[in-house]
Length: 156
Image 1 (spheres, helix red, strand yellow):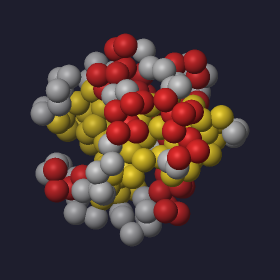
Image 2 (cartoon, one colour):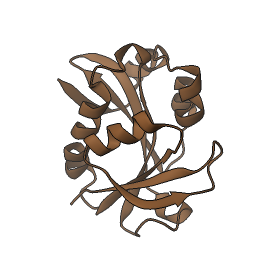
Image 3 (cartoon, helix red, strand yellow):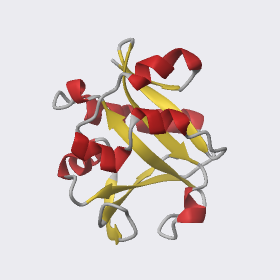
């Protein structure tokens, strides 16, 4: 069973054990970078499969101020990552499916969530689609690793 929780000190060593493929790091960053991001507008979360931490992500409450493609009452999903050893088993799609109800509970004051996913990362795009996001049919061209699909899901 997938559970999502806010990052706390008890999970830091577990998060640091998460391994990503080298080509995924350019999209999601490293576990060390995830832990180090203490920006006020960034909320860090862990993904657990049963009681084991298998992934992480950030919610950016300042996303609309940075990107003109999203609405005022939205948040952004960043650095979504699943441990390499758990990939290919449906954990990513199940995690995205668990994300939307979690957001409805803990981010109910926001209407939508947006993300960008690199066009060179079709597996991640498919995962987000399976999890309930829709492709806006628009592209973000300011990404460090090339063009990105803009995806959106309703929270409310």
